[in-house]
Amino acid sequence: MKKLFKRILNTIPRPLLIRLSYLVRPIISLVLRGNTYTDPIDGKSFSKFLPYGYENQRDNVLSPSTLSLERHRLLWLYLKNETNFFSAPAKVLHFAPEQAFYKRFRKLRHLDYTTTDLNSPLADVKADICNLPFKNDEYDTIFCNHVLEHIPDDTKAMQEIFRVLKPGGMAILQIPQDLDRETTFEDNSITDAKERATIFGQYDHVRVYGIDYFEKLRTIGFTVEEVDYTNQLTKEEVVKYCLAEGEILPVCYKP
Image (tube, rainbow, N blue to C red; front, top):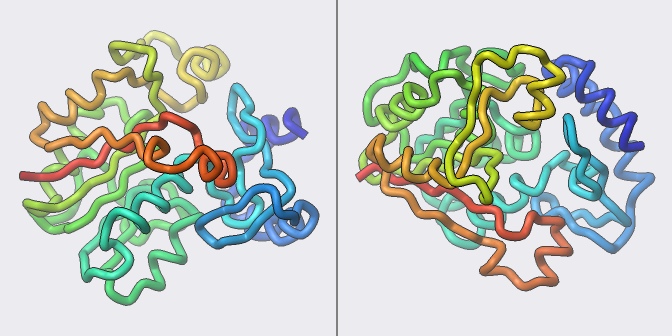
């Protein structure tokens, strides 16, 4: 199973993979139904979750129903329990919208919801994150999760996100992060896809972020809260929702 999923992730282009997932998701959900683990996004429970990972496969992390990963479920719980995202009117910009969220956010009538990406079939606006076609101070809330590690000039991307965020607005900018690494590592001379996957965790990543990521966001101008939200949940909830214990949510505000 793990080898099959790894082969699929590394051979099928992501836009096609998104379309195919809509066909197989109901079948997998039926096969794995049970009461051991629960996806908080839709409330459905399963005997186990699926493995996932481009290079190092993680067991029991991909929800069969929403296709959410640990990071998606953690963000959902944070938004639901700690913010007014699901009730207060807001203008929202969502980069590379995740399947687990896309339709659910789109249905929230109190949101003015726009998605953007260069390649995603779920994007309303095809745009370069380093040169956004949006006005200054336009959005109340921005989601840009697991995108910056793909962007060669992440400084410019962060500056653009800061520019279009309203003063007082919130941006959540999740990235794959090695919390044991002090400084971010990148090396543009590494061009082989397999070598990049081994070093950076995925063939199309350009860096591995360390704990200096938060300080870099602060140099852009953001006020950053490093939220260890799993620490605010019970151990039973962390296991039940298949979360990554200790994962940090970068919750950023524009002063």
